Length: 74
Image (cartoon, rainbow, N blue to C red; front, side, top):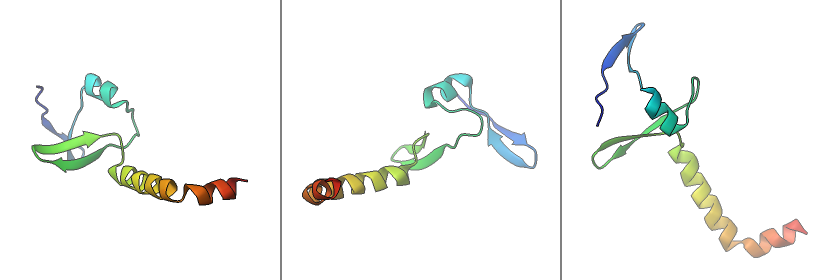
């Protein structure tokens, strides 16, 4: 477990993530991170949870309507 320190960055407060964490998240300068609530606190991820939910819904629709999609593909 690592401890992160809250730091003054300009007029704001922020946390500087170590290179190891950035490498594991596969993010670089300018990329976005997303945080969501978890049972034990918060979770930080490079994956947009809203996009994931939309993709899950799209997959359900495509599975349900696959015969229509096959006809459209012809």
